Image (tube, rainbow, N blue to C red):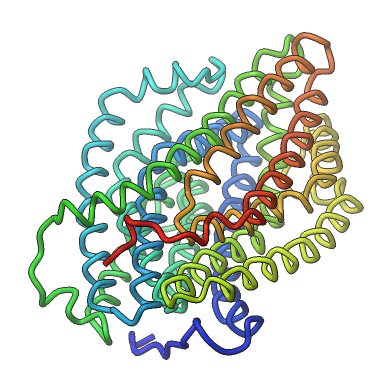
Length: 458
């Protein structure tokens, strides 16, 4: 990889070709991430169900801590994609610099907070006492890696926005390779590395994101990105204001989703019997189900870039067409994948757990949740299009509504009040996802996202 990546004009030509051009590298990146998550759970399974439950619970919490980076990346992608679509690459470089500097400052503050209050964070999150010590050790190491991870997330978004998706593809391949090898080497102590036990899972993650950050820093020094280092640095209040304007709804959306998932974990932890089994099952189920998120996330990101660039080129009709075609592709692909997982649920569950009770509950989780995957495809693909258009508030309110007013109250009612146990939580998940997909499709169909937005003006 030399940095001289050939770019394609995504505002003209065949729509399916443009979708493929953007989505296949992102799909490979999500596959890499899937194998990282799967390996984490696989290795944790050899240590015990408690470690598996802690890895899943802390994973949700860590994603919540990185929420600001993800939000900044969405605001950055929207502005950079519009700039590239309008032919103003100098502006795209400026957006990238401002966003990276701002995110690094935020990460330093959050790292300090996490290292000072990690015990209180774990306690407030509602971790069961059996796994609280494990979770605290994980969180301390993750807090130290926030800076590199923030830079990695933002820089990947910048390259995606410009259509240079092969750069983050190479980076994430190396990140995933280091992480997966590190899990086995550090957990089990393969010579010459010491045996670190479960803590090796966290150390391998921190090491891999640091390596990925360094790779992207190098990519900014070549090709059309050379002005990135030669032009002056400094925070621009106006650019940061625009990034925050689009980023805060995305942040709230992700906070609502991930904190809601943590609350769902907390509801399951309050079961009088089988709480550890239920927690391990949802952790395992989410990891296996993540295989479906791979094409969904790839199409989500493709929608953001393509809708953003085509609106930047002042072609809203083409932007709308590409949004619906991506949704169509997502529903077809995810429905076939969901059917396969439904049929192979027992076999797939056996890959991530050896405990017979956890295996049975994981298989039940998978079969139930596969019923809502076509609606998840609608939500993910059209939600990406709305974000690329700058309509981050619309997508936010749909997520907040379905998580906090439908999923969690229904899960609490069915699981703890009506005595359905973990089955009640699984049923609440598929009902809320069905509503979410339908609402996202209605929002995109209304077309208000095509209206000009003042905050996107040059």
